[in-house]
Length: 76
Image (cartoon, helix red, strand yellow):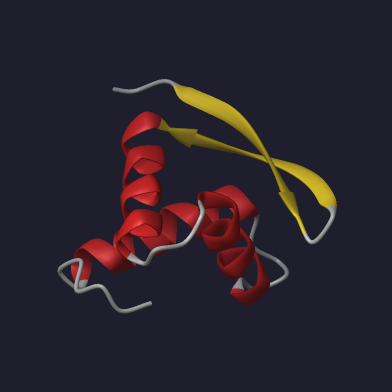
């Protein structure tokens, strides 16, 4: 099992952090590249659409899971 790594990102001028296992992080990087977005832009998009009662790390993991279930189709 991959250890959880804490990372920082600036979203709309605000510095925040999230914690992900390396496989989730690697998939987020791949999703951003496929969509021709920076990783920060993808994280900001996910942050903007997540329910306010969900934490950012969970929202990122769920985004990766949803992407995988859709077969990495390239759609947002």
